[in-house]
Length: 263
Image 1: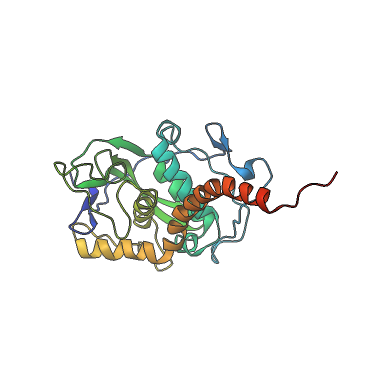
Image 2: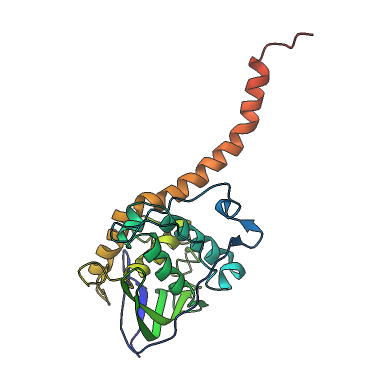
């Protein structure tokens, strides 16, 4: 059986792709958060920017259903899922590339509904296989495809970096290190680009099979259109850590500079 795989090259991962028969589509409805962690807009405190792509009427994007129990059961997958969801729900160059928020959220949640964790050779990052569904969403007027099975390799860069010299080297993917928040988002968005057709009827990312150079170009395309949003994930974490570290020093500074109280 031919497979679509996210496979390592010397500097990048190459992707192999095939289209076969049809499979059912997972259901989408509504959820407010993951576990005990509520999204801010689920409480009405904050509303996300959900302006759609120019070809899709602007509308409020409903919070999508949790497409798979794996998102709660596996915190790494859950974190990557919500990182991508946060990017696609906003109006930015990344969500625009994928057709706007309504389009990209529909496809991404259908895609994530098929994700499973698997143990594969270290050279494979993700694998898509089995029957394929060709879908046309009449609401968003978007055509896309879904593989029946999507496997994330527990031995690959989604979960692991190279731990010791005795283990196989897991290289960086583009500018992102393996087993990082950023690389997981890049991998998921790269896969998403192979599922959605653009305005001219071609896949947003062309099938790159075992063509390492084309795979590098496809991932560079994702970096070009989504890189700012992906890198912001790391900056926001660093900013929060800095803020927590700075609080005690700031408190001491205020004590040392504030005038003595007058009674």
